[in-house]
Length: 269
Image 1 (cartoon, one colour):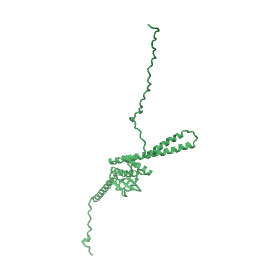
Image 2 (cartoon, rainbow, N blue to C red):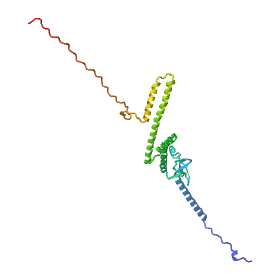
Image 3 (cartoon, rainbow, N blue to C red):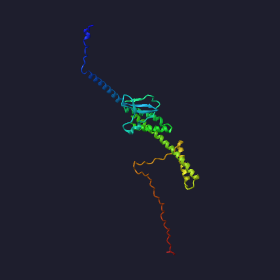
Image 4 (cartoon, rainbow, N blue to C red):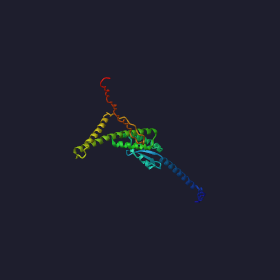
């Protein structure tokens, strides 16, 4: 059978546009560059963020990493400040979700508020471990640098700690004196007699203890009148009132001897 004219003709050749592959590759590179720019841009934004993260019963201060998401423990550029941002006990009212901050100043204010609340609970605890932890938090607050309202609270907390420390020192003196009194009595009872002034020391310590216990009971001793205070750096010596010289007793005027009356001549005139 004879071939038809359509079957005899070769298939039409496809026209290739010159430079089509290069344009496609260029578009792909542009898209990849835009994607890289967006990823880098959001990575930088994440790097600038700070976080308070509850983790393992502690509250951690973290900073974002240079990626789309994620964070790591915050280490300041000044290594001397690293201890200020160490993990603290997780507050009961914090919750289970992390908090995010756009810069370090915002983080510091929130972290300071949490430290103040924690310190207020810890320094008034009778437990020595909690009290010491509260003092450590207060020391951090002194170094963080706060808003004016925070500064007033921190000053008040420092004053409260001063009171507690002074009272503990006072009570510590009583315990020290009780210990000393016990030792002096043992020395007096069982000693060799080498120290003959042990009874004198016992009397002194007992007197001091009696004053302390009387004061604790509310019967305060009458305070002495305050004397003059020296100027700063001056060699102060208390003024001693002058002593009047002794007055000599009055001397009686000398008594003249009695004058004998003139003798009368014998016989008349």
